[in-house]
Image (cartoon, rainbow, N blue to C red; front, side, top):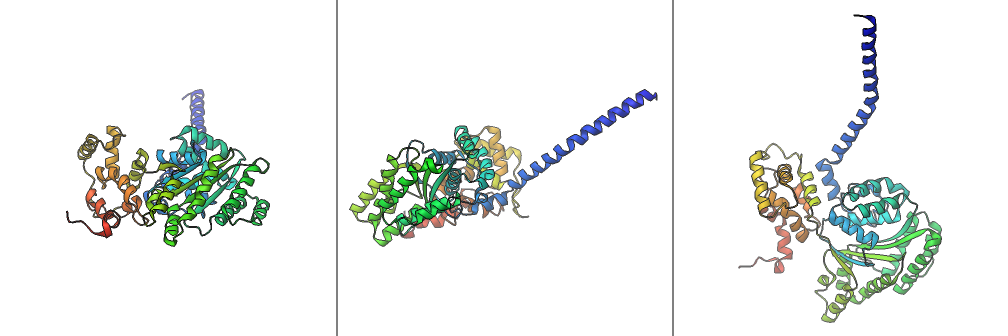
Length: 419
């Protein structure tokens, strides 16, 4: 072989090696990214996250507690209401157990406070949110790049003294923001009445430009527990304090107060044991709020259920996955009944396969049933984790799981009627 030709071949070989060497780090990086995605989507890990309860007070400064948050279109609506107000200053958000409302609320409050330590996690969640609502995602992403901060009043469950609870929540938020001097000053101010509480809020808003605070948000999760406590103690008139706050919020100018009460049903649903006059007053108070019913039966929640089911190790006795023909037949039947209408024919067939042994009908009905009946220990996610996979899981299994709840909530005194 001529020397020159051999040199050319050698040169080409060397160039190929150099290119391969250059590509190697990128390949490792890509492999690492793929590994991270696979790990993040592991069903058991995802289920563990979703079965974990969220407390907006305790988790206000813990971004890692909400890192798994996968926003849905309904969740985006909730975040918009909390973050932007969406045309109202006072919201009443009713949502069943296990729908992720506390998760969405905690994300919103962490965005408002905008602490430096949590921005990395919040940015990742915001990227997922942007795919559903680009305007909202863009606005939040812009905030996370800025130095803007806000005060969040995070309340949870029953509070014995609303004025004191609000003052302490403001102090906690100021401390999280590193404003310890302002927190100390507030601690020395009297706050035993709702009028004194409103004066504190006015002072915060009035000094917002000087202090660098651009938002003030009150989120009261598990508000139904507070209502139950008022009914049990015979103090229904104390709900007027909440009315005063809502009326004040409605009259504030930017940056003003936005508030949201999160509970499992409407306010008047908790007033069954009250005298007629008190029920009437509670109905008037409920009318002060813009209502948002958070029942997530969206395309994204169906996909989340399938992600939880896909790849689960169901044991040696698990029923085999049906043939492609049978799965296509099941998917077609569901679409003819109006189920999975938001998915294409091909997507529906993939969902039917990945959701197995959960039947297509159970897959579609589960979000709505859970929204109506779910309780602390019986939620959409706990149902999925209870499946053994020994046979197809249909509507009968869904009924059996939620039957104890139906006995207690849908039938008088827990008795099944005779006809």
